[in-house]
Image (tube, rainbow over all chains, first blue to last red; front, side):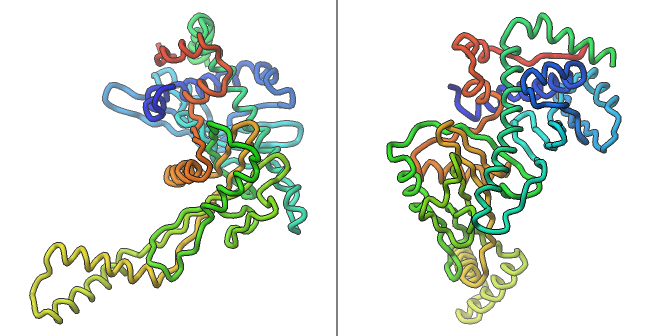
Length: 175
Length: 204
């Protein structure tokens, strides 16, 4: 395997492509997401998208935030060559919701809030609450890992250039 | 940041390597070997070590208290003394004036100034309390997965170093390339293709 720091920098574009593709899939093909997770009701864009446009010697960052923010500026930025670098998402399953932000370059999760769980009143109850929390963390992490696997399998295949990229371009230019 | 917090940050790791049996005993040994020690009343500026998830200020790993079902749950604690810059400046200037008066000289050499500053920092460190920061860890040993409840660069670096020193295992952060290479189930041919990827342009 490549040296870690080299791999982080050289392939950090994969994270931005993943989030840009994910926005496209959320907007056009929720069934693809449900095939990866049968408990998924919907995956929605949350209250924040950050896009970055790197040109030869300049970098432009566009942040769209707000619960009901329009995403037209984001699409416009994609048309100008920007990529999604950070995405706030809402994962819905039944009546439960997970809110979180995922960063493209690191795939780190932040602002992660889980569905409500019981509160440990005693030391004896702590184990149950921790295991319930761990299950809920696992649920969202496993979903994201499966999403990334789906993306990377596509990304290293010929279908990426032949099918996915033309569809994403069409979506960007027709939205 | 903690497992029970309302809002969290998580950095995902792949754990490279396996421990010899009995695994839990070896993990207990690693945790105990590097359990955090208090630095109150000590000149140390910083201390990093493991602590218990349920009692972060009274670490105790006895009785497999770090085992929650199939998960190993414990915490990294970083205690740090932060001397406010203005406090340091005040005590340094007072001490400088005292030294000059005692010696009858007008200036201190560069070396003397550095020694004096180190002395002042040591004296202040003896007097101020350390600020503890606790970051939870969930380790799924069988799956070689570890979740660290912080995205802070410094905390992640301390975790990686302490983990390696405690268990002689390597933590590999799961960012795009390592996720693809290590945990996405790509074939050897696909992993070769991964190395040759270049950025896609969606615009135009």
